Image (tube, rainbow, N blue to C red; front, side, top):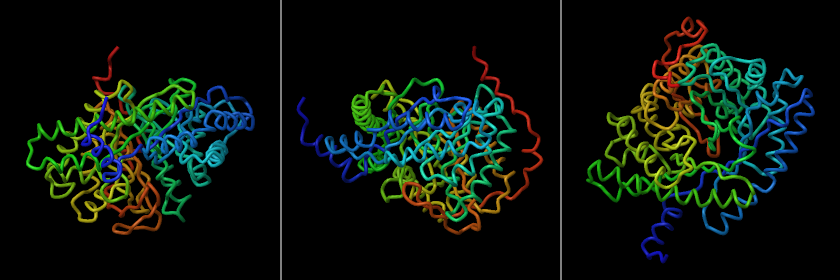
Length: 453
């Protein structure tokens, strides 16, 4: 097949002008066979297995970047939820497991490691409780490790005991990393319907239903979608939908090429491609600016939720046509700190926490990288989590909360996290008390449509 000069220019423009990249290649590693009654022995096995299976991950990514000219921003690993792996050990504090993973990741030059996780949507087992209570220490003592806890699902309902606990854990994690604007919370996600094959941090883990290993890919490309829309000013929504779908198709095909090549070189199965539009703090790499390119004066204006719904759906449709291995989230992320357009909308007052919550009913994930006043009570954090879990449970979709109560900061101040995590203005929260509600405990039952058997 001979490519036309226009097609070659279009591809070059995607990379050079519109910031298209492979956001991450994430190597999932099963640690189920590392368990033992001795914590020290379990950690030794974990370290050995990570070094053995992921030893050439970074070099493989760099080689593909050089040979294909495609930027791969992050090389990551995800592991089996540590609550499962460490449950049979004699340890009460699981933070040494996070330190072992962090040390292995640093030795290999890996950017992030996910899997300091627990799955408690229906109940909290002993290993789950020990892991969750270790999260503040683990995230304060490590640089690359990310944690996640799944507290709800469409099939099981919402575990309000876990939701209540996570509000307190988020507060403790913020305080444990107060000298860095509570950055530990930027590496902690609370989920409903967590996917087991997600390559994106901070919620990535290698699900217990996965095989021995798998290579998952996360693409990006908000700038490419925005540029395509700007070439169709005045077009109808029918035309815009088609433009987004076709562009998502091209992005996904490129991502699958990289993923399959990386998996082949690593000698592991190719897992999935997650085609989520993942913004960065860089100007022009913003999901918010895509929504504005559709005709909104600013993100947060009336019509924002409708625009985001169309964007998410067309991205999914284009990706599904491009690959039979689509998984993860595959939609549009709307993190505040990682999206310069979203930051601008918050600063102008056009978007609030309530509007962001409404947008999560149609986007890819949920309330993401939102900085709030450090004196926000743990009960309020739990109530925010409960609201977001309800959206995911009822709508049969993944939702998540990654929220940062920044110690010592108040509404209007600025929190800085650095790198891909960016920085964010401190947003106001509703100060009405939710303590009695979140302290009731028990489980909010699954919705009627969850019973499918």
